[in-house]
Image 1 (cartoon, one colour):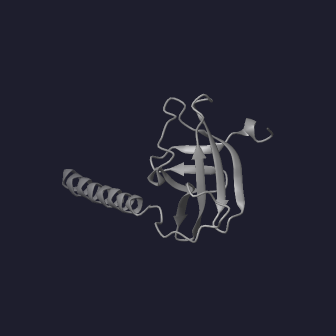
Image 2 (cartoon, helix red, strand yellow; image 1 turned 135 degrees about the horizontal axis):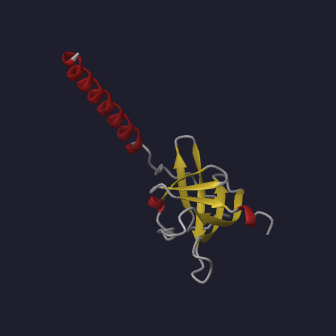
Image 3 (spheres, one colour; image 1 turned 90 degrees about the horizontal axis):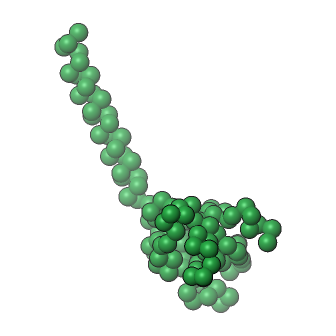
Length: 132
């Protein structure tokens, strides 16, 4: 029985290393597309292009420092210029609500109700804010 334990442990180690390598490889390939489409005139210059291989959106996030620390104002535009969302977003980490919202490298994507940050945090439409 002992002669099978060592090969089994080595097999588990190799499989684990392969899975970790695969996850690392996939995570490293997530990036914001730097190819900017022609920005329509109605989108502010300060809006950031958050894009991927299948398209993207322009994002304009701001923060009122006197406002609730977890709330951000957001305007999200489709690439052709129409508005996707205007309103408040709430960050999912109330104990660490600040991030560099003016830096394009802070963002990784928008799915229609969630703005994903590169560090894994999320800005989402707060349910209490939908009807305001």
